Image 1 (cartoon, rainbow, N blue to C red):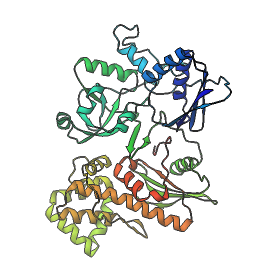
Image 2 (cartoon, rainbow, N blue to C red; image 1 turned 180 degrees about the vertical axis):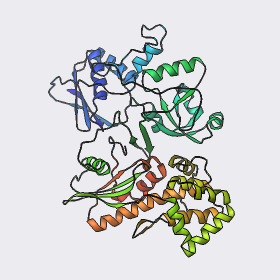
Image 3 (cartoon, one colour; image 1 turned 180 degrees about the horizontal axis):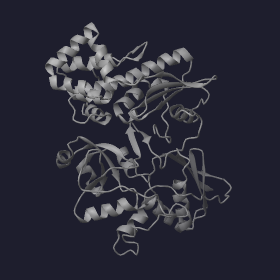
Image 4 (cartoon, rainbow, N blue to C red; image 1 turned 120 degrees about the vertical axis):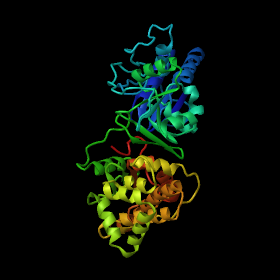
Length: 469
């Protein structure tokens, strides 16, 4: 009887199976590793007790966690042993634990060896991708924190078990966490920060040098970020070009191309409705049916001066604007003089220093209650009604609502607007296969809102295709 392990693996990448193959070979255990769609199969044939013990020790101590790992089922079966082996191509993943031990151990011949390349996943080791990031103990706006001393994680941050696993997975993505350490809050001026553990040789050597200087973290402006978010047990890739699934060329439009690639992963690849919520590329809703794929709803570009003029020409909203100008004259002048996007505009209204999506998103995360205010998000014949959105926010600012509660309410409203639009499109096109995309899902409020309020419609979030460019 053979021991058979079926490992759910939500990626075509072969490095995890490669690690298993390498450990199988090293232990001289008679077995095989194979990989098919969304599954790795490990078969151990009539295990030798000693070899099995070696293999068990290797996997316990050195088999890495992966973002794509799912459930593992172990059975004993009477199966024929075919000796299938895995050969993995090279990937831009981090050093494995055994390579890290060599680099960090002063007694190792590979101590501080910047030419060391991991060959522990049945790969033909070659030089890794060049890294042009620069590491420094000094924080600047937009910096990512590199974790130097993993033992200090719980002292520095509030982090869940799932976030911790993602942070130290073999893919080493960037995640956003809550800052716990008061000194770090004062240094950065933030409540939340993007963090990353050492992800290649250059970052590992930088961390070793920093630790020798008794630093627990350093900073860098990540030139090639891989951003992941963990929401209600869902680990999703927001943006990445290292380990996520590469897109096929299915459409000349980037949004529709991503949509069609993700639809192929759903149970029904012929019909689907997509919600694309993107800071970079705007908000749109897409449909695939027997006729074609197309964008059916697209938010028009936000123009602050035009929106302010619309509000001033409206008898009700003009009063809001005048009252706002009287109460916050400097903020109103700021709005008139600058060409902010919708998120920068919200930052002005919420009195935030940085004028971008991340700033208003972080402010929203400061609220830990349930249920937000009613923020109006509707459409007119000309498209999305930005003046209605800003009017809602201004009215609550005039009522001295806490800014973090108001920011939370805005993102909750984005979630509700998405659900309402999807339901309308479902009724129109008679399609109930829903695909979610876009980097705005980095905000856990939107993500959680759709998971909780739209769960009966079973919206699909890809596990291996990045949500955005």
